[in-house]
Length: 228
Image 1 (cartoon, rainbow, N blue to C red):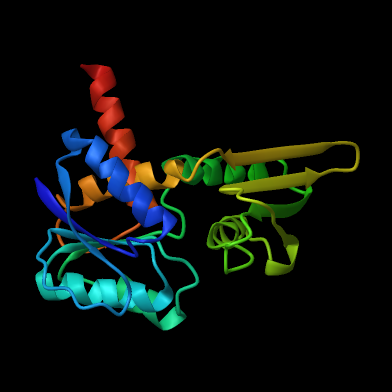
Image 2 (cartoon, helix red, strand yellow):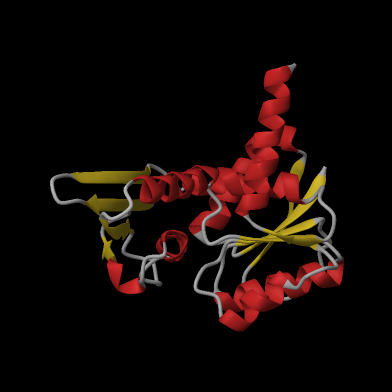
């Protein structure tokens, strides 16, 4: 079993990840340590999973580098300097995504295809998240907008109740309107995907990885299984 250090363990995502790891032993992971930003940690782990804060994410990467462990960071609103630093990592397997859901990644690919097919239509992106979310627009909305070439001013947002995450793209033509929507029904959507990404990442060679790499691996594996 590969040992996991969860950074930001008291947060809702950290708690969900710990629970899912416990209930999916077939993935080969076990929780070895729980940590909050700013706390010391003497535990050894094979992978560090971080859903905490910008400062906590930087601490998580430093811990992983010290332990020569893999590192998965799903924290959003990170400093640009740190984003560039992660992309240059060559000593450990490091994964970063502002949204670790494979479903959301595929939704983004659908949006890109729709934008190509409906070329010339006006586009706007709207996102809805829970009232506790600190960044606005969300990291996911910014990523989707970047994929579509949408300027930041075409992103609108709401903070409502305990909504896990909803993203809506509207394409408006002269005579019709197309609305594409992804709605997360539970935070477990993201936690479950994070655990699966971690189980994959811990087996990868050193380097920087994104959802594009993980999605390619999943599709390749599915194709092999379909051909058996």
